[in-house]
Length: 204
Image (tube, rainbow, N blue to C red; front, top):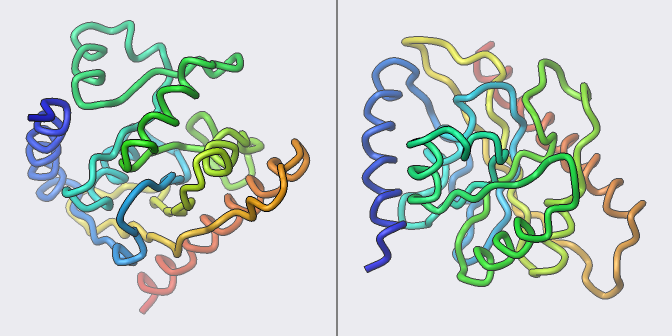
C-alpha cells in the first residue's frame, strides 16, 4: 500500500469537511485535469490556497505540493507534510534536491502542485513569477494546469476555484532563460484571466 497516498486521502477528506462548512467552494473546469503527470500552478494569497488546490484535483490523483522549507522545521507539521508527499524547497537558492523530488513525482505520474509566485501576494503582478514550474514541465514533458484561487476567501459563502485547460510546451528545442521567464509571465496572466470567470459568475 502507498501509505503517503492513504494518509493524503484521509487528511484531505477531514479538511474538506471543515472547509465544506466554514469556507465552502465550487470547482469550475475540473474536467481539464488530465490523467497522468501534470504541473498544477495557481496564484497564492493565503494559507488556504494549498487546501483549495487539493480540493480541485480529483482524489484519485495524488497531489504532491512543493512547500517552503521553513514549514518543515515546525514539528509535527514537518512530519505530517512529508507523510502526505509534500516536499521542501529552498526559495532563496537553486534547490537541486527539490528539483529531483519534483521530477520524481512527475515520473510517478502524480500531480505536482506549485505556486509560481513563490510567496503569498496581495495583488496580481506584485512579484515576478519564478520559472521553475515551467522548467519542470519542459524537462518532464508534463502539461501545466493553470488554476485560479480567489484572493478573498469568504466564510459561509461559496468560493469559486477555476481550472484552466492544459498548457503543453514546445519541446522541439531547449528553452532559454528568457523563454522560461516569458512563459511564466504568460502563465500568471492566464491564471489571472481565469479569475474573470469568478467575477462574471458573482455578478450574475
